[in-house]
Image 1 (cartoon, rainbow over the protein chains, first blue to last red):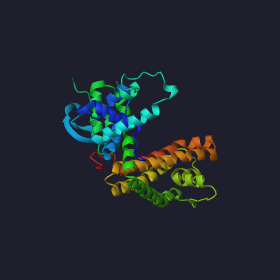
Image 2: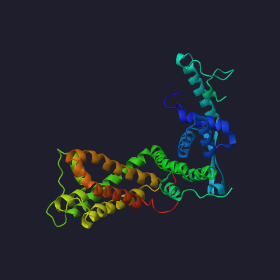
Image 3: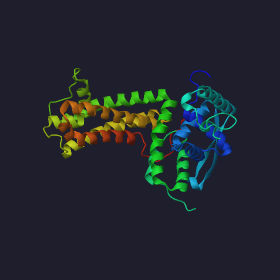
Image 4: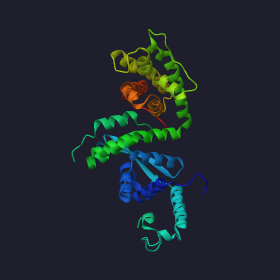
Amino acid sequence: MRKGEYLGNFDLMLLLALMRLGDDAYGVTIAQELEEQTGREVVVASVYATLERLQDRGLVISRMGDSTPERGGRAKRYFRITGAGTREVRDARQSLMNLWKGLPELKGEKVCRGNNLPEWLHGC
Amino acid sequence: MSWKQPPGMATWLLKHFGSGPNNEAVLGDLGEQYQHTGDALRYWRQAIKAIPVSMVRDVRAYPHIAARALLIGWTAWILGAMAIFPLVFYETNFGFDFEPSHPFASAASFVWMPVLGRASFHGEGPWATPSAFSSAVGLPLFVATLCGWLVARLHREQQTSTVLLFAGSILLVNLLLIGPLILLVGSRVSYIFAGLLTACAAASILGILFGGGLFRGRSRTVSN
């Protein structure tokens, strides 16, 4: 990975949320998914600002959906992770795993069976 | 499920001060969340936070445009202030005096000339007489409206974010000058001035937003 191309923490969480949500990923569901997993309120506008930046890097694509009365007639903007985005997530996971290995302070954490990843990282 | 009207003021603020191509989608998402949760406080929090987030997004996406807007805005503001603010010395022989050895005092006396000039030289004190109040509000409002209009006019594509950025910089300068003023003249004296200085700063910011067209209802900002 070249300098300046690392994924930030929030970038990575968003890409993982997109992978989990599949075709139903738009502002509300993404924020909801992140809030459920992290327990912290997510600013919807930050989700869009970050996804737009990731879109400029070719890691996600977006399309406009239909408008609904529930949304005051405003359209949803759906996002999907691209192949390049999936590769970035995989690389980030590998880097984190390498850094994770052998840290005595973190020994004893619950890990997912089979892949030896911490629960928070793998989401199992 | 019956339709619940989201908090109108928060919607208005985000509609007028939010920028970028995702503002409508954000409004839609907040409206949808509100239908599910009915949490007005959350709606307000999200709407208020969305304004600086969208402005920062625009500034990061177009840093040169943001820098140009600041340069144009401040140049216009300084020229406008030099031309208009000395009206406060009407009927006196006084004028603005720049002291290189006291940069903070000079900057404060320039920025707040409509307040300090009136209070110091007319012997009226800082109390909000109609005359002092009209100087403190009217002069900066006029100059700021012109500056806001100019910034908006020259940056139509990023109108909302550039106008907000300029208004934010004016607010920041006012806040930065408050500290040195308190140190210079003592907290008791600056406390007496507080009302008029606040009115002066508020008039400047409102003037920029008004001149920048942010109070007008229309679809704006086609960044991308």
